[in-house]
Image (cartoon, rainbow, N blue to C red; front, top):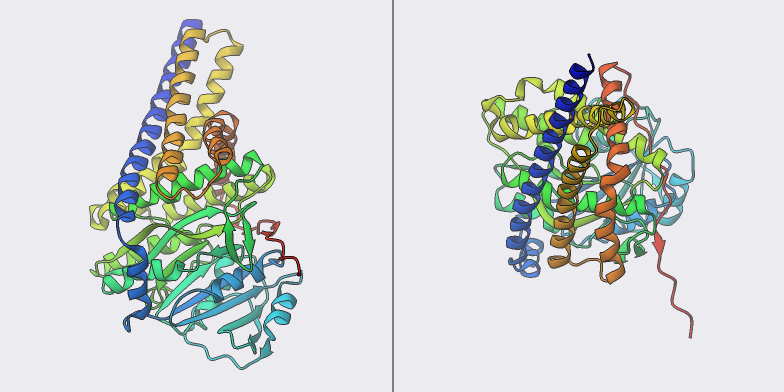
Length: 479
């Protein structure tokens, strides 16, 4: 009996190790291919290209849609960043989704809001009741909608979509700070290939502790909280390199809800965002690709490997746990809803590459990792664990994980070099190593809870993340 148990535990442990090695090797390949694309992109003369986009009569107008629920900590900074965009034709539609704080009052005071009669441009279904619509009297192209909340971000975005007037819609979180040329950078693919490009995104970075002024990031700084530092490495790996590679393979599944640009007619055609989804950003991207593929209309989702947006990330374990559980729950919803696309060559690289990868490594990954950790603990308690074998397994897994994180930080340092101080660079490298001990295991547990919630078919509820606001530069002293 003991021999059989020992054999089972050993087989399980080696299986889990093999799975982790395949996962980390895949991530390393994504990083390397993404790095090549980033370096190639840097050779393009960005300033001259953006000037042409700004001056071109073909540059389409953009409606920026901002859902806000209890966002008094940063909503004015976000609006300042959006309204100061260098873009020829722009409007902003902010939806106050039943805020219980001073979100609306702050915006009303700053922009002198006055009630108006709305002119709806679409009839996408919404659940919340629109209470009033207001326009800025300061000359800014700002419309503000007040509505009752149904605790779904997508519902607020659908209301904003129904008021949008321009051919492109940009969905931005109310805790996001945009780079001054963000819209020009991401609108460029729509001008170069207007027939096929239906969605585009860019690099999102962590804004916690960054020095800002009226919505502009003056100096990127790394937070002193290790939880935030680890997420900074995560975001670099995911946005700067991972999604760059997926987009080059024409298999991009996710354009971040913090900043994403889409063709308005295509979004309206599929009925807007799915109000039942907890991963409404990925859900919209996959729905658009499925719909257009079925209709025989080739389409492209593009990723611009340049920073376009800065956003707050969770600073406590409890908030991070809720966020990652929600993401995992939403991924399970997405894969189940679009299960007929998985492995289906009709849907191209999305069906053959991206969806199977996300199923095997993103959705089921926490099951394998938690199961593997539990088997090691059980084996140790029962005295079935060989110390040499255990050390080898742990050492190989940690080494590969650290290698991936180090490669990510190296690419950031030798390309964009946003973090100027040596202390920040050393902290990023250390955070990439620490991520694999403790954080990765807890992260797997959060994701497993999200998967279990999806399997139990719990009613999805979107929970807003508490905001701390941005670090504002001190005003210059008077002479």
